[in-house]
Figure 1 (tube, rainbow, N blue to C red):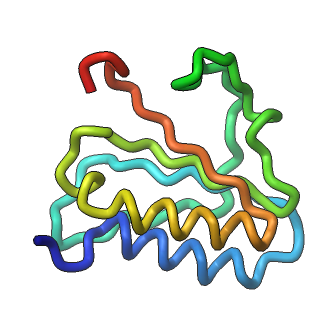
Figure 2: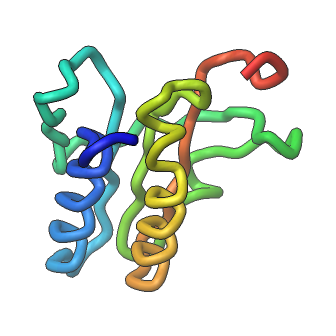
Length: 116
């Protein structure tokens, strides 16, 4: 259906980066405006701001709740985006690999959860 998506390329870059990390770090990856042939560049030194958001289970979560031992990957995604839908399985697999090395992952979708 799709070749390698920009999100998949970015996740591969993150996996490579985190494999070399020795101290905790937080990375925010956002699906901002970009064309399908241009990969977004992650700001690996960006500090995350604390937040309190309702999870899909109705729990209120903060940055402290989702932090990993060695780092945290925060993804801003759109659940109905064709690119995200095409790589959801890959994202889940990559997040499991990150968890194995102490990196927790969280995806934030700003859309209405009931409609999307």
